Image (cartoon, rainbow, N blue to C red; front, side, top):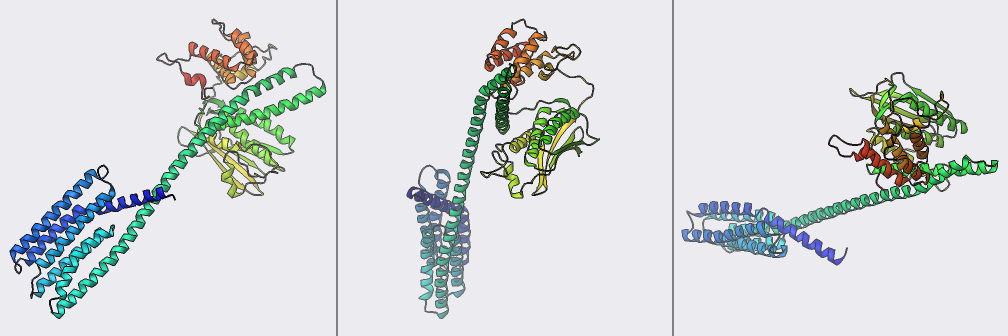
Length: 566
């Protein structure tokens, strides 16, 4: 600790001590007035009245000065004088009060009347005991009060020549010594408490500032990850698009093999980038759910088909089981549910060497109007140590963090899944035992959807060939052009090279009325991989066409969803 901080803490401690002095001052003054009245009344019959009245006047003047000081401190303590000056003024007032009581003990001392002499002792000792309690936080104030208040009275008793009075004088001196010792102990304890409280406040302030710094760093990290991921994704999707174009050209077997490896590597890199982007969006609260009716069995079958292929390539068994009471039609975000399940199933396959991976779906107790489903992913992998469970949920963390770890990945899967599940108002639970495998459970609320079969056309519908016509014309379903444009806009925002095929089919099939000649500049932009220009064209068309609220304003949120502006 530097000399400046030490000086600052010393001043702050003294300011706290002075505050403790002034806090009970008005109450002490009131008690003093009561004590003066009782003392004067008790001694009135045996002491000269002029002495009593003179002493009362002295106490009155001192009391008025101390009241003025107390009121001034309340009003000006933080503006006019430093704590040192307020402390000096209080100590001076305490000394005046001690002198006033010492004078009272002398003036109201009745020679030869033992009963009233005892009253003097009781009053002085009582006043000094109370003063010790309130003044000990600044020992000098206590000493300047005790010395003039007690020692003159003790001297009177010691010099009267009566044996009993002499003993009383000795008792007064003993009490005086006790009060001095008590003052020192009280001061030490009070100062220690003040120091501990100040230290605690400083630690709390440091923790708050450290927490703010952590939050700032976390936001900066998330912004950096999002920005760098977007910057990587743009050329990466162009590379993948070029791979697609090359794959349609005549190639030798060796060229096809090399191109396939490059395409798989680029796809794996894009998956990593997408995971980082989703994590940073979820961490910053930028993910919005795309809630719609979806067919759960179809979703699970689609997920299971891909997972089963991966399982067979690893010589593992994969099974999927859905309880009979699970509704088939649900309302929720099927895309995010798919993403979470793919993360968990992918992890299960990656870490399981022998045995099986299973997906079990069942209902959980639910409130009225809601259905809560449990998606349990079980594996026979190595399991996770209990002390590693919490860290495995942190980003960039894996159970095996050694330099020779066998499993790939950047450790973002579980962290992303956890945040996505929270966005879906669900929870991610885990049971794991080393050597016996793990079970990850996603518990999410949904609403039961209708089974009337109606649906809107999505971008993926445009890529399904019409079997009867033998062409790639748009399927004969109710076409929601706004939904088609929004799907295309989402592809463009994600730098998806398939956006070009989607736009070609939209324009070529005549599903898109084109009074503003949108198709030509849109296709040109996508052919040149100018995704930003294509996004601006679609955003303008969506805003002009149908994306308006009842008051006529453009619904930006619906156009751009939750994607951050670039």
